[in-house]
Image 1 (cartoon, rainbow, N blue to C red):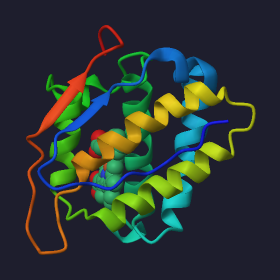
Image 2: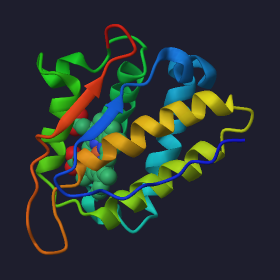
Image 3: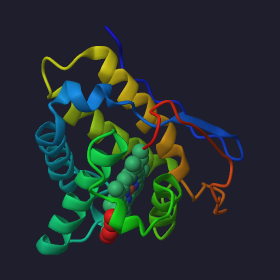
Length: 169
Ligand code: HEM
């Protein structure tokens, strides 16, 4: 069995990550499975310590939930249902930019990952290797959403090393 570990962000340290391959997307059951997972995740976010980062208005929250779902469908190798949001920008760069508007620290990242881990653990019967691969992407990429450190300094995530194993996401 694989566990889903979390390693700390280190300021100024290069983050190396790979976009997920289609393996996870297929294991979870394509678009439908992704939607089930992401909707569950976002419902749990609403109950978490980072709920205040997100819109409190129900309709606005529903929009974020749906956009988030479409992003994950695309980044995991499904149809390109998020492309138009990013307006032609590289998806990873666009995602970092979206998060830059919020002051995200390591504590918020850990809460986000912990919430995702719970949502993933509820997917019983999921191929553990596929789950671990998806997790490794989230665990690493989430470091690039951290832009605020305990000494008050801001960090711009320019130190990225993306490894594309997927052949065209
Ligand atoms: C692997 C890491 C992460 C990924 C891939 C990710 C992905 C996304 C996506 C796709 C969206 C919707 C963007 C859109 O508007 O089209 C979003 C929004 C957001 N995410 Fe993340 N996220 C990650 C980590 C985090 C973390 C650690 C936080 C910590 C608080 C966070 C907070 C937010 C917030 C506040 C929004 C915007 C809500 C709004 O529009 O008002 N995210 N994220």
